[in-house]
Length: 163
Image (cartoon, rainbow, N blue to C red):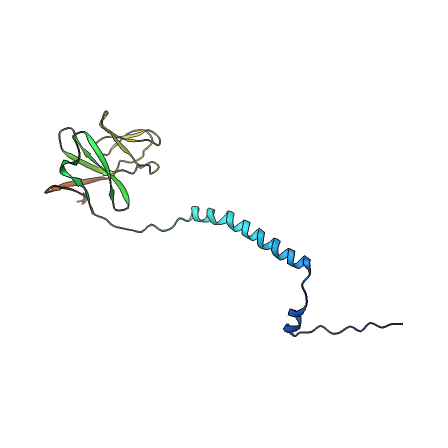
Protein backbone atom coordinates (compact mmCIF):
# COMPACT_ATOMS: atom_id res chain seq x y z
CA UNK A 1 0.00 0.00 0.00
CA UNK A 2 1.38 3.33 -0.98
CA UNK A 3 1.15 6.15 1.44
CA UNK A 4 0.81 9.67 0.23
CA UNK A 5 2.99 12.17 1.97
CA UNK A 6 1.21 15.48 2.43
CA UNK A 7 3.42 18.40 3.15
CA UNK A 8 2.08 20.97 5.56
CA UNK A 9 0.98 24.29 3.99
CA UNK A 10 3.76 26.78 3.84
CA UNK A 11 3.31 30.19 5.28
CA UNK A 12 6.27 31.55 3.38
CA UNK A 13 4.90 34.13 0.87
CA UNK A 14 7.77 33.57 -1.52
CA UNK A 15 6.70 29.94 -1.94
CA UNK A 16 3.09 30.96 -2.66
CA UNK A 17 4.20 33.38 -5.34
CA UNK A 18 6.00 30.58 -7.16
CA UNK A 19 2.81 28.53 -7.53
CA UNK A 20 1.33 28.86 -10.99
CA UNK A 21 -2.14 30.44 -11.08
CA UNK A 22 -4.86 28.48 -12.72
CA UNK A 23 -6.44 29.69 -15.94
CA UNK A 24 -9.76 29.99 -14.17
CA UNK A 25 -8.36 32.50 -11.66
CA UNK A 26 -6.80 34.54 -14.44
CA UNK A 27 -10.08 34.60 -16.40
CA UNK A 28 -11.99 35.62 -13.27
CA UNK A 29 -9.54 38.45 -12.72
CA UNK A 30 -9.86 39.66 -16.33
CA UNK A 31 -13.67 39.40 -16.35
CA UNK A 32 -13.90 41.22 -13.02
CA UNK A 33 -11.65 43.98 -14.30
CA UNK A 34 -13.69 44.28 -17.51
CA UNK A 35 -16.97 44.48 -15.60
CA UNK A 36 -15.53 47.07 -13.24
CA UNK A 37 -14.39 49.13 -16.23
CA UNK A 38 -17.84 48.97 -17.87
CA UNK A 39 -19.54 49.85 -14.58
CA UNK A 40 -17.27 52.86 -14.05
CA UNK A 41 -17.80 54.07 -17.62
CA UNK A 42 -21.55 54.14 -16.93
CA UNK A 43 -21.49 55.55 -13.40
CA UNK A 44 -18.84 58.27 -13.84
CA UNK A 45 -20.85 60.43 -16.31
CA UNK A 46 -23.93 60.14 -14.11
CA UNK A 47 -22.00 61.30 -11.05
CA UNK A 48 -20.47 64.21 -13.01
CA UNK A 49 -23.94 65.20 -14.19
CA UNK A 50 -25.50 65.06 -10.74
CA UNK A 51 -22.56 66.81 -9.05
CA UNK A 52 -21.33 69.44 -11.54
CA UNK A 53 -17.97 71.12 -11.04
CA UNK A 54 -17.95 74.25 -8.95
CA UNK A 55 -18.25 77.37 -11.08
CA UNK A 56 -15.56 79.93 -10.58
CA UNK A 57 -17.14 82.82 -8.75
CA UNK A 58 -15.87 85.65 -10.84
CA UNK A 59 -17.53 88.76 -9.48
CA UNK A 60 -17.42 91.03 -12.50
CA UNK A 61 -19.06 94.35 -11.81
CA UNK A 62 -18.29 96.10 -15.08
CA UNK A 63 -17.55 95.21 -18.69
CA UNK A 64 -16.76 97.00 -21.93
CA UNK A 65 -19.77 96.39 -24.20
CA UNK A 66 -18.65 98.18 -27.35
CA UNK A 67 -17.97 101.47 -29.07
CA UNK A 68 -20.44 104.34 -29.45
CA UNK A 69 -20.84 104.19 -33.25
CA UNK A 70 -20.96 100.41 -33.40
CA UNK A 71 -24.74 99.89 -33.13
CA UNK A 72 -27.41 101.39 -35.37
CA UNK A 73 -30.67 102.48 -33.73
CA UNK A 74 -33.06 99.56 -33.04
CA UNK A 75 -30.29 96.95 -33.04
CA UNK A 76 -28.43 94.89 -30.46
CA UNK A 77 -25.30 92.91 -29.83
CA UNK A 78 -24.30 90.16 -27.42
CA UNK A 79 -21.15 90.64 -25.35
CA UNK A 80 -19.40 88.94 -22.44
CA UNK A 81 -20.21 90.12 -18.93
CA UNK A 82 -17.88 88.06 -16.73
CA UNK A 83 -18.57 84.43 -17.59
CA UNK A 84 -22.08 84.98 -19.00
CA UNK A 85 -23.47 86.63 -22.12
CA UNK A 86 -25.22 89.99 -21.90
CA UNK A 87 -27.23 92.03 -24.38
CA UNK A 88 -26.61 95.65 -25.35
CA UNK A 89 -29.59 97.22 -27.14
CA UNK A 90 -29.67 100.57 -28.89
CA UNK A 91 -33.26 101.75 -28.82
CA UNK A 92 -34.88 103.56 -31.78
CA UNK A 93 -34.49 106.88 -29.93
CA UNK A 94 -30.70 106.31 -29.62
CA UNK A 95 -30.58 105.39 -25.91
CA UNK A 96 -28.79 102.25 -24.74
CA UNK A 97 -30.26 99.46 -22.62
CA UNK A 98 -28.44 96.40 -21.28
CA UNK A 99 -29.51 93.17 -19.63
CA UNK A 100 -28.42 89.60 -19.10
CA UNK A 101 -28.74 87.42 -22.21
CA UNK A 102 -29.48 84.30 -20.14
CA UNK A 103 -33.15 83.30 -20.07
CA UNK A 104 -34.51 82.76 -16.57
CA UNK A 105 -36.40 79.65 -17.68
CA UNK A 106 -33.72 77.20 -18.84
CA UNK A 107 -30.63 79.37 -19.34
CA UNK A 108 -30.83 79.72 -23.13
CA UNK A 109 -29.27 82.76 -24.79
CA UNK A 110 -31.88 85.37 -25.66
CA UNK A 111 -31.94 87.58 -28.76
CA UNK A 112 -33.24 91.05 -29.55
CA UNK A 113 -35.94 91.23 -32.22
CA UNK A 114 -36.03 94.69 -33.81
CA UNK A 115 -39.42 94.13 -35.49
CA UNK A 116 -41.27 93.70 -32.20
CA UNK A 117 -38.75 95.58 -30.06
CA UNK A 118 -38.70 92.66 -27.63
CA UNK A 119 -36.13 90.24 -26.30
CA UNK A 120 -36.94 86.70 -27.40
CA UNK A 121 -35.85 83.30 -26.06
CA UNK A 122 -35.77 80.74 -28.88
CA UNK A 123 -35.99 77.70 -26.59
CA UNK A 124 -39.65 78.01 -25.57
CA UNK A 125 -40.75 81.28 -27.20
CA UNK A 126 -40.39 83.35 -24.05
CA UNK A 127 -40.48 87.12 -24.50
CA UNK A 128 -39.24 90.06 -22.44
CA UNK A 129 -39.85 93.78 -22.85
CA UNK A 130 -36.99 96.28 -23.19
CA UNK A 131 -36.79 96.62 -19.40
CA UNK A 132 -36.18 92.88 -19.02
CA UNK A 133 -39.66 92.05 -17.65
CA UNK A 134 -41.07 88.70 -18.77
CA UNK A 135 -44.24 89.27 -20.80
CA UNK A 136 -44.89 85.94 -22.55
CA UNK A 137 -44.04 82.28 -22.25
CA UNK A 138 -42.52 80.20 -19.48
CA UNK A 139 -39.76 82.48 -18.06
CA UNK A 140 -40.52 82.81 -14.34
CA UNK A 141 -38.47 85.94 -13.59
CA UNK A 142 -37.34 89.08 -15.39
CA UNK A 143 -33.85 89.37 -16.84
CA UNK A 144 -31.14 91.03 -14.75
CA UNK A 145 -30.68 94.57 -16.07
CA UNK A 146 -27.44 96.55 -16.09
CA UNK A 147 -26.53 100.23 -16.00
CA UNK A 148 -25.06 101.67 -19.21
CA UNK A 149 -22.46 104.45 -19.06
CA UNK A 150 -20.79 106.23 -21.96
CA UNK A 151 -17.13 107.08 -21.39
CA UNK A 152 -15.73 108.89 -24.35
CA UNK A 153 -16.20 106.56 -27.33
CA UNK A 154 -16.70 103.43 -25.20
CA UNK A 155 -19.89 101.90 -23.79
CA UNK A 156 -19.43 100.41 -20.33
CA UNK A 157 -22.01 98.23 -18.62
CA UNK A 158 -22.10 97.69 -14.85
CA UNK A 159 -24.22 95.87 -12.29
CA UNK A 160 -26.96 97.92 -10.71
CA UNK A 161 -26.24 98.93 -7.15
CA UNK A 162 -29.32 98.11 -5.07
CA UNK A 163 -30.10 100.93 -2.69
